Amino acid sequence: MRYEVKDLALAEQGMLRMEWAENEMPVLRLIRERFEREKPLQGIRIAACLHVTTETGNLMRTLKAGGAEIALCASNPLSTQDDLAAALVKYEGISVFAIKGEDKETYYRHIHQALDIQPHITMDDGCDLVTVLHTERREQIADVIGGTEETTTGVIRLRAMQKEGVLQYPVIAVNDAYTKHLFDNRYGTGQSTMDAIMRATNLLIAGRKVVVIGYGWCGRGVAMRARGLGAHVIVCEVNPLKALEAVMDGYEVMPLLRAAEVGDIFITVTGNRDVVREEHFLRMKSGAIVCNAGHFNVEIDIPALERLAVSKRTVRAFVDEYRLADGRRIYLLGEGRLINLAAAEGHPAAVMDMSFANQALCVEYLVQHNGRLPHEVLPVPAEIDAQVARLKLQALGVEIDTLTPEQERYLSSWQEGT
Image 1 (tube, rainbow, N blue to C red):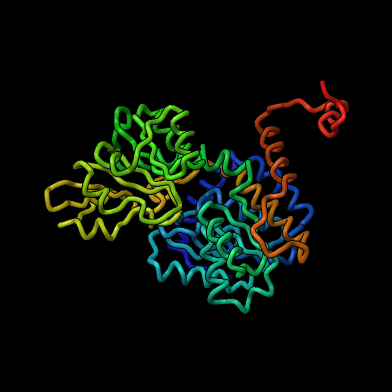
Image 2: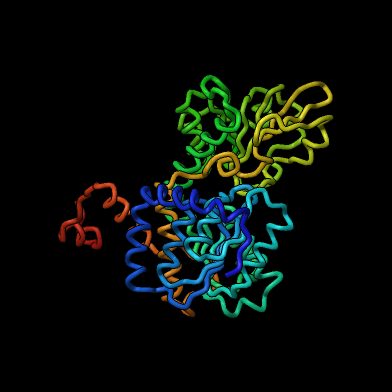
């Protein structure tokens, strides 16, 4: 087994934290118990590029229980939990290539090391692994059955690949499952982003003007949690429907140039690049805090901030102070990377339970339908989404109603009217 982690001596601590997370992941645990009996992934090799966290660790254990051989690398240089990476190597026998804080060169070397497994299945969070496979290791694509994609940014990139006709195998957009984006993106991102900002800064959120840039599912969650902490929330959007929704949800909506003058904390959640730019930095008041909850560290134009600054220093862990020529100070959190994973622990295990249950079941689905799926970005099958929801309700001890035969007939017919 090959691996590259920070320190195997951290493994015991990582195992304890993974077991703690498992207590909040009953759906994945039920799937693992079935996988152990049935071995639906026997002989399957999986290359996974995901956030190397305790929740991901439990997903890897589930796939291994199903018979898979796995190589895992990090989808973000700052999101790796080094103790968890060590635990997967030492106690689970899984090849892991991930070190928190790794540089860009190491990040891509780890992706190549994961691909050395010659995968049948790819699991991605941001599409970097799929991109490397399609550009630098095309000779391996013939062996690939299919893949899964965990996040919005990755799905956007994959759809661009499909549109250009270059996507060479089917990829299931796990991000678009109802049991993923309705809960993981909204409740997970909302809670973990505000948690990370408070850990990094120790600031009181109540009474501050928090500017949420982007009102997709993640932005909705961040805005909701910021308001719950007592913040005055301002939303910036380019999509008129989402902007209108934010207004109807009770938020103040305005252009970012105007928000830049009044905001205290700025959070990007767009999936796009150069959202906060030089013209915005020039309008911000001294002490403004800028961070990113989108996937890549391109949403904030950091090179522009570097150009404007006359000095830079790290004042707290994950807090860099940029002093401008006029004396104003702007604080960047987590190097502009995913703040909830850079300065905190990412989503709570209870919401990742559903996202990773989708991942596990979609991998099984790809294996079962080998050779019968188009080379496109595919939705999570409705039956898998519903199964995950049913299992989650069961784990929570919640019962729901069922349709009567007459109701089912009525909903499937057209003859009956008033």
